Length: 209
Image (cartoon, rainbow, N blue to C red; front, side, top):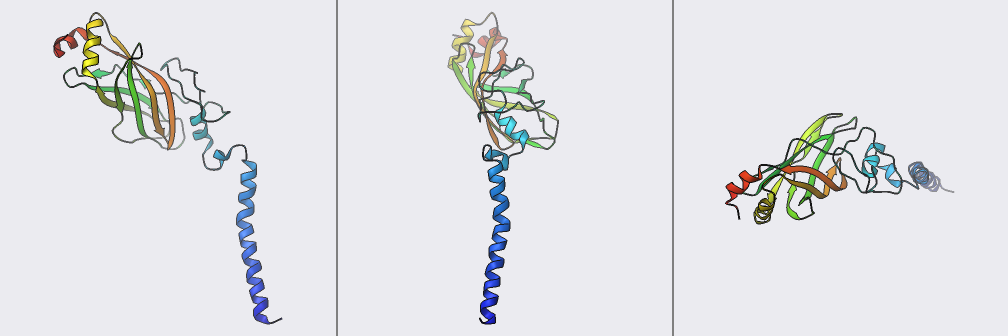
């Protein structure tokens, strides 16, 4: 056997060995996480965030629930669903609407709140508009941040409702909330969003019906 053939075989053997060194640990990891492949790429905190509070469970303060993302999970420690801050604001002239809420980052690393869309509905479920957030909010570890969702309400719908609720407040909620938190999409079925107050003044500003 020539020296060149020996060298080629050694190179081939070393190549196979290098491949095995890389592949074998990966195969072991895949086997270990075969029932939870998300665990290979997602930290436990984010997995729990995706899975916390199986759909239908509720938070006593916000009235919100998060849809389940996988069969089993445990709630993320210290995780709080978005909490209303004051009352939503409505401009009867333009239809402009804003809803401020507080969000707490429960992680030990910075967390981005990069997207939110939701439908604004009345207490009886009538859709009157939509909201979103205009920009990504980066929240420091363990910190709170006030995030404001903005949008427009259907002024014709609201004006009709104002005639029914001039003696009180119009309770509203956010339905079908979809948020992207830390790169993970979270669905929230329902959030009680407070009420639009001073309906008598709004009726005067909008011309009434």
